[in-house]
Length: 215
Image (cartoon, rainbow, N blue to C red):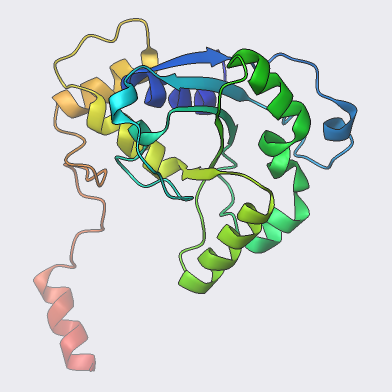
């Protein structure tokens, strides 16, 4: 699987002990291909099923860190447009975001899951920071008949939490990279805190004194 976004989504569910079936090479129905989308942006679907029924529990529309394991089974679509926050204007301009909830996708999921109940999940980059803009974006996503939304930082947090600094993840270059970053303390805790400085150093004392004299 070449798309890193889908790869990370898949590994997020696998680390939470889901069975995962990638199904991203199917032909798009005409109703999907006629909708506007980013160039070369084909639907990227995963069908996931929880292997631990006892872990299933009610999950909010916006999935928070630690809640992925509460899902039972779902069809997941990854639309991680990392250059954008998902403001209402982005959602309104891209009705293709509702593809995961289209009847064609639901029919496909019914075949995969043998007619058993499932949820629809959309993975996005991130929502607006402003509470009002965030609420409006969530309302529009709900209107697309999607059952759940996951922001990419939540997905990454799930992966980082599950990856062991001393585990072996040879088949996965992404998990091996994250393991090594944790092993050598370049990633600490779950806030992606780096061990090296991320802010510019303070000015030398002489410059601080000069600035104080000016003010």
